[in-house]
Image 1: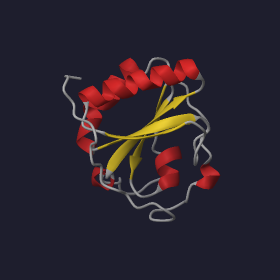
Image 2: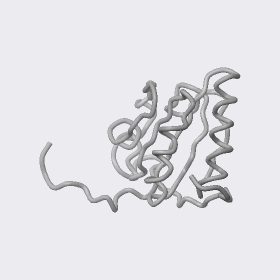
Image 3: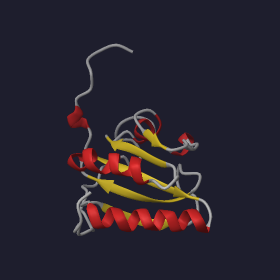
Image 4: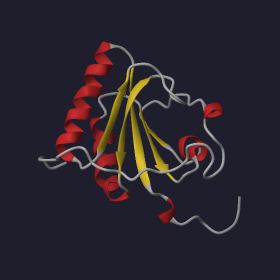
Length: 140
């Protein structure tokens, strides 16, 4: 593909999906969740004990602002406890955000692209602002 590069301003925020399978991995995911909440101003999503949407394993989501990326993502790289984590931008194009522009920490998992809308603004592509529900008190 050629053409002008897309501006970074098109990224409204990011999501990290922390996947787990079984009690031991769920415990590791809970530890990561607690440690993230102690260190970063993020919005922690609900636990999904069963696969939901395009995700093939149980997981929870961490929503975070663009300015949190340089600290949170490297921290997750070093502290993912063997779990797979999908990190993707939120540009309003869900299919591309999850399958084209995403990065994986750990082993990549399949994503069910057929349930994601294609193109910007299709389906529920509206981007909600990140409102942190954590109160960080420790350094990353």
